[in-house]
Image 1: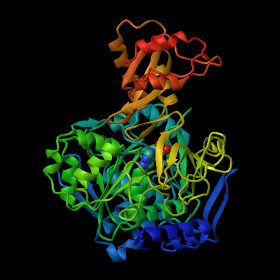
Image 2 (image 1 turned 120 degrees about the horizontal axis):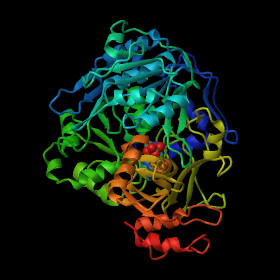
Image 3 (image 1 turned 45 degrees about the vertical axis):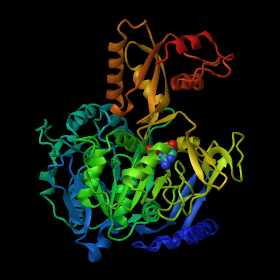
Amino acid sequence: MNHAIKNFEEYERIYNKSISDPESFWAEVAEGFHWRKKWDKVLEWDFTKPEVKWFINGKLNITENCLDRHLEKRGNQTAIIWEPNDPKEQAKHITYKELYGKVCQAANMLKRLGVKKGDRVCIYLPMIPELAYAMMACARIGAVHSVVFAGFSARSLIDRITDAGCKIVLTADGGYRGAKTIDLKGIMDEALQQCSEVEKVVVVDHVHSNPEIKQGRDLWWHDEISKVNEECEAEEMDAEDLLYILYTSGSTGRPKGMVHTIGGYMVYTDYTFRTTFQYQEGQVYWCTADIGWVTGHSYIIYGPLSAGATTVMFEGVPSWPDWGRFWQVIERHRINILYTAPTAIRALAKAPLHFVEAYDLSSLKVLGSVGEPINEEAWHWYNKNIGKGNCPIVDTYWQTETGGVMLSPIAGITKTKPGFATFPLPGVQPVIMNDGGLEVKGNKVEGRLAIQFPWPAMARTIYGDHKRFKDTYFSTFPGKYFTGDGSKRDEEGYYRITGRVDDIIIVSGHNLGTAEVESAIDEHVEVCETAVVGYPHDVKGQGIYAFVICYEKPKEEEKLRKEIIDTVSKIIGPIAKPDKIQFVSGLPKTRSGKIMRRILRKIAEGDTSNLGDVTTLLDPTVVDEIKEGAL
Ligand code: 7RM
C-alpha cells in the first residue's frame, strides 16, 4: 500500500473518485490489510438512525495488522522508540518482533485474569511502553480498552470505570512529568473506593514508590507477565466489534464514551496516516500527544503501527529539564515527521530561540499540527524555526468522534495557507450549513461544519446511550453529522475552522465542556452558581474564565480562588483549572433563566464596548457590575 500522491491534480482525481464511488474507493484501500475473512459488503448506513457499518462480515484482528504481518519484512525494525522523561536515561528501541512478544504476553496475562472478548478494561497508565502493550493486548483478545488520561482525577476515573463497567484496571505506581511524580496508584485507590465492581488491579512498577498493595485485588505487572509466554493466538473479530471506548467532554452532562469499532478504524487511521504525512518507508515519526487522547490512539499507536512505521513515545514534557527537550528528542532519534499541537508550539515559541538553535533538526521533513486552530504567528514560527522554511505544515482537523483526520493538506502536495486545514481527505464529504439548516454552497461562505457521508473511522455510538449520540451529532442537521465547529470556505475553496459553536472550550488542545467545569466549581461549599466561558489565551489557545456567585460575599477572595482551583483539579483534573475567577453577585440571565454566555464571553475577552442587546435580560444591571469587576 503506497499512498504517495504525485501532485495536486492526482489528489483531486483520487478525491473525486472517493466521492463518486466511495465503496470501491474504500474497498481498494482495505484490500491492503490482512483480513481473516473478507467483507461481504463495504458499507451500510443510515444517518437518521444513525447506523453505520463498514466492511460488513469482514473478520480480522487489528493486532495481526499492526504486528504479525510486519514480522517477516520488518521484524527487526524498531516499532516504538520510547524516550523517557529524564534525558539522562536511555531510550528504548522496541522492534516489531519484540513488540509482538510483549503484546502477546500482556494478552496472555489478561486472559489468565479472566478477561474475555467484549469485556472492558480500564487503562490508567503514563506514557510508558506498557501502555502500548496493554492497549494492543486488549485488542488481541477482543477486549475493549478504555484509556483514561493519566492527568485525570479520581472522580473522573470513577465516572469512566462505572460507565464502561470495567472489572479490571491496568495502572502504574506513578508517572513522571518533568520534575513531578504523579501518584497514579494513590488516585486509582481513591477512585476504587467507589468502584466495587473492579476485581483486579495490575500495577506497573514504574517510579518504584512502593505503593500500598491491596491483597487479593492488586497484582504487580512484572509478576503476572512472568507467569505467561509470548505467543497468543489473536481472537477473530468482526469488523464492527468494539475496539475501544474513549471519553470526550460534552457541552452538557457527563463525558461521552465514544465507541470505535475495529475494521473501519484500522483502515482509516492507517490510510490517513500515510496520506496526510506522505509517510515513507523507514521514516521516524513522532506525535507528541499523550495516548490518553484520541490523537495518541490513532496516530501514535494504531495508524503508524499498522503502516509499519517507527513511532516515538515520549514520557516527558516540553519544558523539562529545559525548553530544548523537544528539539533534543528530534536530534537524538533523527525524527522525520513531527506532529504536535498549537498550544505546545506557542509555549515553545515563547522560550528563547537558543533552545532550538542548540540542536540539529535537519532530519525533519514534515510538520503537523492538531487539536485547535493554529494562529498565524505560531504557524510562521513553526515553519521558520523548526521547519527552516523547508517542511510542509499539515494542519489536521479532526475529532475524537471522527477517529482520524478529516481535513488537512497533503504534505508537500497541497499548497498551504496559515490557519487553514485546507481540503477534505479522500472519502470525506464536508458541507457548510447556515443557521436555517440549509447547506451553503460555493466559495467565500461561512457557517457550521457538517459531514454528509460516512467515513470508516467515525464513532458508531456513545457507549450505553445511542439516543445521546443521535441528539448530539445527527439532530442539528438531520441526515448529516454535525461537528460542533464553525468553518469558512474561502474564495479558493480552502477550509478554515473558526472554532466551536457550542459550549465546548479547547484548552491546550483538550476539550472541556463548560457545564463540566461549572459543576465542578459548584461543588465548593461556598459556591452557589457558576458560569464558565473560554477567552483567548496566548499559550493555551483558550483559557477558562469563571464567573462565580457565592452564598455570601467572599471575605478572602484569594484564598477562595485557590480552594476553587483545587476543587476543580480534584474533580476533573489539573487541565480544567480556571485561569480567572471573578466573584459576582448575579449572572446575566434571560427571563427563561438561560445564562447569556454571549455577554460573558465578550466581557471575558475584554471587549465590553458593544455587548449587543441586553434588554431581554431579567436584570440588566448585573452586566454593569460584572463589567466593572472584570479581570
Ligand atoms: C484531534 C482532536 C476536537 C476539536 C474539534 C475542533 C478542534 C482539532 C483542529 C481543531 C481547528 C484544527 N480531537 N480542532 N483540530 N480546530 N483546527 N486543526 O483534537 O476531540 O480532542 O477535539 O478540536 O474544535 O471539534 S478532540
